[in-house]
Length: 149
Image 1: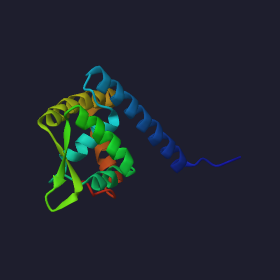
Image 2 (image 1 turned 90 degrees about the horizontal axis):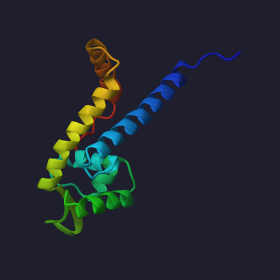
Image 3 (image 1 turned 180 degrees about the horizontal axis):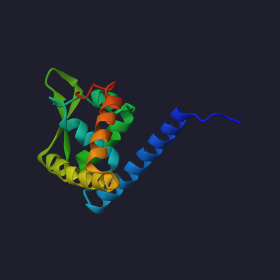
């Protein structure tokens, strides 16, 4: 008889919750017809937290993806007018990415879709349980303090 693996069970629960969160957020994005994918949404949110327009390589590192993936995301967002590429004033070989006014508007709309998704996900929890969950999540996230570009 094997002994239970509590950490393995928690890991599986976290993975299942992550998949559920992604599924629900994707549905809310589609319902709001914002014209962005979840990955593009993440890139827009990352840009919003940068003090100055980041380089493509910085975005790739921050998003933990290969640079080619950022290029594809930026291509789509640029085509829809949500971001723009701009040359780095100090190095012409470097391209920086900045939010446009339309991108900022989309970010506000995305916030509403994310809140709706969160309400759906957290509906079974009481206010006290939500507070406890928030503290626990903050504790788990603590090791990932690098939130700026």
